[in-house]
Image 1 (tube, rainbow, N blue to C red):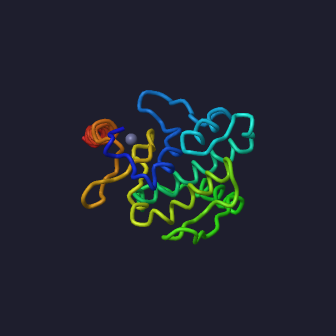
Image 2: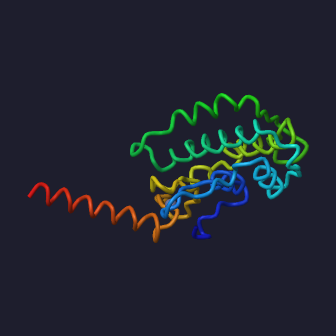
Image 3: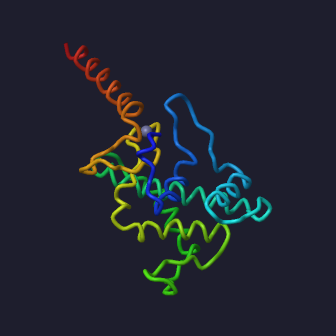
Amino acid sequence: MNPRHNAPASLALVQDLVNTWFGHLSGGADDGLATRADLARFCREHGVDVAEDDVTDDEVALARVVREGVRAALARHDDAGREPVDGEALARLAAVAPDLPLHVGLAGDPAALVPVGGGVRGLLADLLGRAVTAAGDWPRLKVCRHPRCRAAFFDRSRNGSGVWCSMAVCGSDTKKRAFVERRRARSQAG
Ligand SMILES: [Zn+2]
């Protein structure tokens, strides 16, 4: 992905989780959250020291529910009115979110949302809190409109109109398909 689509520090955690899996135009991609080892590595890469043995299969499943729920939430930043929102993914996230509590911490200034738990659950709670604390940056974290990509990217365009993680790859591929479909429709009509 174009590095200018990297999210600011406040949202890097969210972007990185979503992008542990996204489709590639050339066939499927590996899921970066397939195993307990994957999730432990993800936690360590984001400042939470978790050993593989400390991670449960339930937590791997939980992390994937959070990932797809967040992807569905981010998709609304671009897809509004264009593509159906993945309501099932949002509902699954809503069902587990109460198990990922945060409290308001006033030890520092500004106040912070602090995860109640530690380990994997603490990291996931922290991640969900970013949707609130990132404020104006949140709507710019989007999901690529290409149906076979769906990567999270940060839209730095002046007017916030970006829809592709990569114009050169996903944008041009989509335009090519639209062109082919239009030509087919024309030839069928003629
Ligand atoms: Zn893309």
